[in-house]
Image (cartoon, rainbow, N blue to C red; front, side):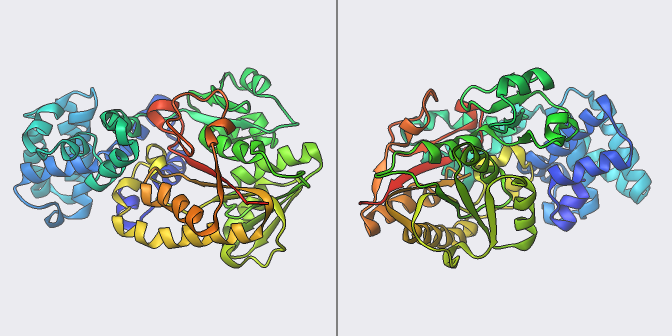
Length: 432
């Protein structure tokens, strides 16, 4: 899996399940393989620094396949309870089988050097001296992401270590019970899960393959982070000026989770939703997610969808860096760069502007990102308010019962506070 991520930019959470099935690895062995594979992806920054120190050369000067073995071995030494002797021996044996005796000796030397210190001792020896840089190194995040989190936390920047640590904790599986088909209580009883804290449709699972659960197979439930559920619910709860005529729009619908929840809620009231997705393969995912629901899927660019204006409610769940879901995508933190933000922010602003043009007077648009990065969140909203004269609603009122939502009017969810992905949510009403 590490090789697939390194060579083909594969997604770890998509690659590993297939590899486990192909090799018929299950039970405790599958759990260990998952821990080692995901852990080595998440901790790459720390691992590479230790490897470079032990090897006496830059990471770029170590062959990629050999580096995969070293990362796997150092992760076992520093971040698991696997015995040092076993971690070194299995790594050396793997290197010998793959590359021969010479490189096996190199692996042995690097790992024995790595095992001379604990993870905390390596942090003390190699971490930058500045507070953010040190925390970024300790919790294996690029410094720019750690700084983005600190900026988003603002006056609560003392929570930075908790926020970074939450990205390294294995998240529970969140299910959504489809309204009208099954309740969260019923879903929890059927699956052995636990009802969610914030969304009335959420259920938490400790683990396992949710695709094997009967309610998921039958379309009565789906995998969806609770934060994502709250975004959709915020749109339905926002107060309009004038009646709700039932014209709703999901302008960035792929892969379809929010559109499906909105569609199930719309069906109860006899409403109908348009869902826009520019990529055909993602539009097909939306179609599958909303099958049998009152949702019409349009393959179009949300910036010029060609749809008729006059919508009551519009969701703009904008393409973003995804920094709020790093715990679910172990390799993503090392794949993103600050340049990505510069590419995405103009798109986010254009999508929100297009939604504004499609919104009727008195209607509400909800803007969300799975990122806490301020240029993608507060700055986009501030620009929209300045340009349009929009009335910014207090989004906290749209998430009743959810704790620690800050000073408003927008909301930033956090894994370490809420157990959800770090979703940003803001609501704007068009003057009548």
